Length: 114
Length: 113
Image (cartoon, rainbow over all chains, first blue to last red; front, side, top):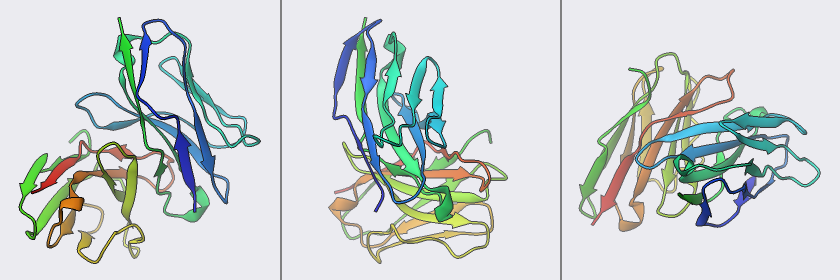
């Protein structure tokens, strides 16, 4: 079945550092790809998404490009802030499978130190 | 309300007891999903409702788990004869069929002693 593998954490960086969180997927169809973020004490919320190959999703300075050839959707940010500390989840869904249920990676906890 | 709400926010129960978790989706969201998040793990899909169609129950881990939804409103997830491995955060999400995004509630943290 479909699956998502993401970089194990926790990841600790200093403020203004460059961030990459790796995500690769396995899917039989043509999935949509997502990054969700869970800030401390808050619910899961969509950070960005891409629905087809070579699409780039972006939000709040974060970017991820849908790479079909490498089945990847790595999350990047050029200069992280303390407020980016959260757990990040890579996920996919297959719109053609009707239910559009999300398949999640295990999550990566990110801590940014001032 | 402005977002998806879930109740209770925390539930502690004894092994063998039944529990019922509630989800109030955003008005107009025809799709509703339940997920489970065990400690240190990603979210696992449990069940999906879309309008009046038969639910997709393919993620329910055992017959102790069941869920109901009346129309496009409130949903309840019931776990019978709880076990310690049921301890997790149970998340509800809603969405519309045409829009490729799910909106999550804050979750219910279930602890089975």
